[in-house]
Figure (tube, rainbow, N blue to C red):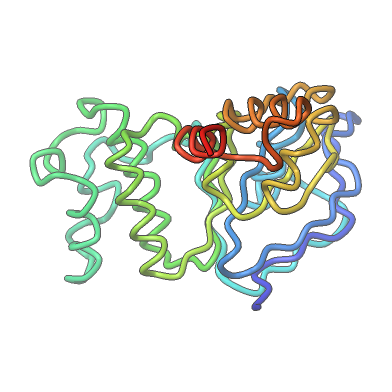
Length: 241
């Protein structure tokens, strides 16, 4: 399994205030990651540091191309065509743009576009750089399910590994691995279901559980089921056996 990026002993201070402390993480090809944590836990600071926006001590070793899409990035141009440099894209790149953005929207000013389209512009700009590893900060939550499916399909087809930062804990179940941050450090990490089973620690950190995982844990305590289920259908099937 190819390592795409390694973070070793990462520390960030801004105005003498420590924001990240001794972060060490590895990111591997094909292992999607859900990164979460309470407010001010350091999630966005970590992404900004990876993007080169913060000074830091330690090491960020990139062994594949890495792109970061931040929550509140500003646009450089008024028109969408200029923002993505559409007229200078090759045929395949233009096809990718049309997959996510309609021809009607392509000719509009950015200020006239819906919020979902503005988010897709940021993501498409990252796709144009052909990353192996893509970090997206807290904006997938605002996309329609159909749009999310398109993005998921594109990531899979083009072998792009996704790291999603979000506080929508229900989305964690779609990811292979989970990292929970707290007060600028990594509090827990591991395979997603194994992390979610650490109910007491997560709740102490202010991180909830996906509804059916939480319900499964409670039913398991009463001996009604013998494992954790992640969907309504699977849980109902276990209860009615």
